[in-house]
Figure (cartoon, rainbow, N blue to C red):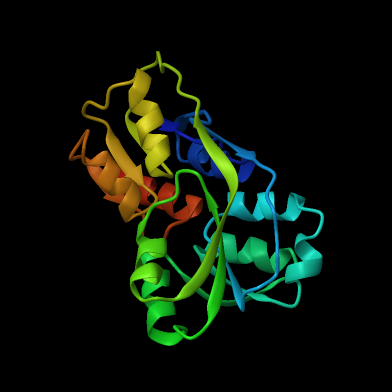
Length: 220
């Protein structure tokens, strides 16, 4: 039986998929996100939410819904979009990556203003492109990401990665050797390139697609 290590804890349905495919599953959270207090004013046309962690933190603010329920959002990732809509907000457009969303905003919404709800380790592509295009936006940091690395003592065959910070946390106490690594997207894959060339990228940036890609390559 082959073993897969997931760098985030999977839900029961995701684990069941792997177990039924005859895999031993080890899953741990290699990063932890903590919501932080933040000031909030309503002064822009739209909101930008690029992760479920950002949304979770926003919803903890006592005035967030009151101030933004009449606003619409731009999102990164289909899973983020679903959660934003589930919380009662309208999503105008969604892109798979922050850079793709930035390009969309520059091309179609350059006259609008935005509030970007971010984490402390957010990538720079989106805010840089908005700044370069002189698009009005306010960035509010709403959560922090902490590395929670641990040593994996068992041998394993596959590694599932869901963020660049998850990669960096994993390699703090572990070495990637000949295992096949599946990345949720291109930015995670770019970080993995510093440690291995045995990289596969999910067709879409979602946990389900990471698992699907792993099952696909395990049959090769």
